[in-house]
Amino acid sequence: MTTPALLPLSGRRIPPLNVGPPSFPHHRATLRLSEKFILLLILSAFITLCFGAFFFLPDSSKHKRFDLGLEDVLIPHVDAGKGAKNPGVFLIHGPDEHRHREEEEQLRNKIRADHEKALEEAKEKLKKSREEIRAEIQTEKNKVVQEMKTKENKPLPPVPIPNLVGINGGDPEDNDIRKKREKIKEMMKHAWDNYRTYGWGHNELRPIARKGHSTNIFDHTSVGGLGDSFYEYLLKAWLMSDKTDHEARRMYDDAIEAIEKHLIKKSRGGLVFIGEWKNGHLEKKMGHLACFAGGMFALGADGSRKDKAGHYLELGAEIARTCHESYDRTALKLGPESFKFDGAVEAVAVRQAEKYYILRPEVIETYWYLWRFTHDPRYREWGWEAALAIEKYCRVSGGFSGVKDVYATTPTHDDVQQSFFLAETLKSDDPTSPQSPRSSLPWHDASTPYEGPSHEANDGPSSSWDDARRTCSWNEATMGGHMPRMPGPQ
Image (tube, rainbow, N blue to C red; front, side, top):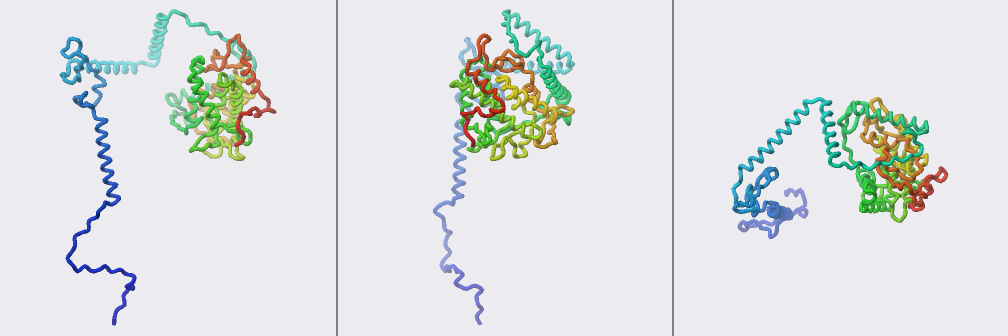
């Protein structure tokens, strides 16, 4: 009986039998793709090596030998001089000259002696007490001053001190303003004393742990993080040059026109904000750092193109209003790190990672500029509100700390007192700015680190500038209604 196959014969292919002599292996006419790739890779490496050797190896016509190390940098070439056999060539590394070991050794000895002398001086300094070092520093300062007096006998020109309204012997006449000033001074002293005691030598202070702290925080590029100083310093370079650096002013004007065209929008609720350009589209989010732009627009209004001083002062006021709303809509009355304008959400942080406040100065700085330009009392009040909130929620025994969530009624501290809190935040939150009738920031004023738009003592402010000031000193009823040139809701 025949045994049936496991599979039908039609489902299997049986190779034909080769009954002849064994044949040689078949050779392919072409290479596989992987073999071609490996061959191309080897060829590319060889070409790169050849070109690298051509461009980076030393020129044999100029260098007879290749030295590793810094010998050619530290020891200069010595010219052969006029009486030499071949004048104009170098004897230390000259093409056909022997090395002058004696000159080379003298240079080495001099470098070694200078190095040892510097080490000895450093050791001697370390042995001295702090008082002795301070005395030496003061002595050196006195020597420099004396030398300057000897070289230049011409006295410095007198600096006129303006008679500012509201100032009497250096103190404000208003008793309430004096009390507020003393409070800001006390906050500054509390922050500084604790930094000096616990954080000296570090970037920041941990006021709760009472120890130093150093960080390196990076943000994405925008009008805020890593970009703000560029625009601001273009304007200040123009101001510091007594308005003669026209290139800096041109670059500033170009920058703010581009910012206004591409980044500044108005929300459906009427708040003007500066968005962030990311991945080819505008994100309707404004960072706390970008709030500095309100003061910058006001500071740069005078001298702007096409007589647009009023427009930029209004724009600065609108930015100040938006940033104030970001503070006012939180539980702690302190602003979040960034806030969005999406749908029903306006000037409010959405993500948890954006709800923190780290004692930043930008909003208070804008209040300060707008107060000095317009003398609208609302900016003074807003600054004082921020000072009270900082005092209430950020003050700890060892200084001032940032908070992790400005929307939480009970603050959680991050235990970091930033260095800019002393350098900028408290400085800008001084409620004692004089109520000068001038529309400008008097650059003689010691409390003003930068020259603002100013006018000569005998000249009144220009009509456009004066009109801009009056326009921005609006009342509550007209708040937000002076931006006809701003784009509509987006």
